[in-house]
Length: 226
Image (cartoon, rainbow, N blue to C red; front, side, top):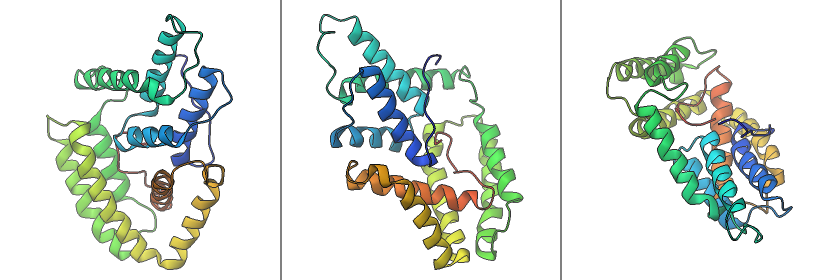
């Protein structure tokens, strides 16, 4: 994926959307930003678990192809122009992952890493600790499955993370949850009024989840999220 980079952002969740927008705008060579339909497309990619570098590779491939086409004098008007190439880049990534050719594709190792972090997590309250221990055990059991695939694991991981987050919230209390939500809200100021509310709500929820987990030294339970 050489030549494809992503700028830093103030919040890990907003960074995915910011990186896609800035990369597309820079490569297109036009100051116009994303439309509501474009933001919805980025949201779909994020929800499907497409890695940021895969999305940027697909955008680069689409715009490189356009630059050498008969219609190169006409500006690409929407991110949707890149959708087919992004899907193709994702398919290539999945094939490489299945063959063990994708760097960092040790799924079993990632699950064991999640389990180990849960077992030594900082400051978990009684409710969260009660949820964390059996979850760590379940993660280690899944890691022993020789047929592990990220696509199959993601829904299970998302459900387990939701249960753990509910337990963390129960221990933290409303004041701590409100503080975290306020911090995340402050990072979304540049996008308010530009992103569709449905997309903004998901970025907000993801940001809160990440910060609640990070408060105990934990990362999101996902094989594809930032």
